[in-house]
Image 1 (tube, one colour):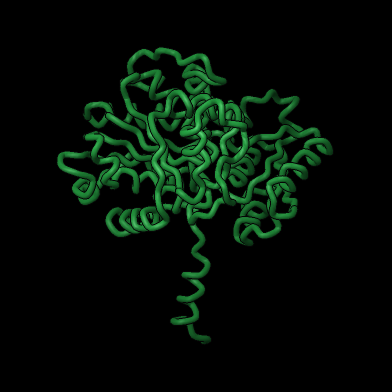
Image 2 (image 1 turned 90 degrees about the vertical axis):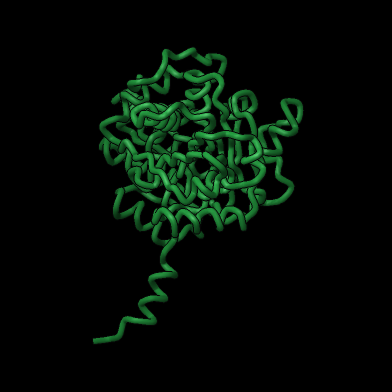
Length: 351
């Protein structure tokens, strides 16, 4: 258990409890960073009178996002005899890089299925930086799942889901263990609220189990794009309406591309019961919030991380009256190709 935190009261009716997260923290400690908590007086002022915002900076995590926590825990928890066959996943984003690095650190193969339209820099990173075996498929969820299942059958490797795997959820929950401990270390009263971006829900559910076990009165909020509002709609509809498929009436459309995935059966009960509310954000709110973090804090967050900031700065959230608010800046993997390409065209001359 992280130092300075109260004894845990296990929330044990879900697929993970705080003991699983504590075990994950011990397991992954040599393989991940303890990311910093940062402050910004200008953003505090924008968030309301006497409000203190605390930003958990997972953009500084290995591979540039929180995903390495869950991937490492899922990879390291498997016995050697099984692990040597490697691991399979399907993803074109942060989870793919996290699984590839986790496998590289353990010295086992990584089989990554990506859609054919995945950005070339991400494909190159998987191949050349992390040494993964990469397989392209049609850019549909069904095609990705089918090819991943095929690779599991061919190789005997174990599949790691990006959010619905309990070991992944426990790994992501270590963010909350660190974060809440760091607040204590800073000599601050504990947080009134946590704001966490949600796509598939692995991070939000893992953190909610920890937060509610340690501090039952803390409020836990999800931040979700209105253009990919699956979790919001599921929570609004309740148990009877949730079918384990997307509730959103249209294909997801948002600049926060890391939050387009949907909740499945392990995440849903936690989000249903332990998450106090999910806030929906417009694209303008997300982009404006990310721009503020860039300009005021000089932190290059990805748009998914902008959702939590957008919630904290919204009038709707400020009406709740929370004074000490934790916000997870979940990652910093942004496509800068166009920016640097345009700069080279404008300023670089043949010599």
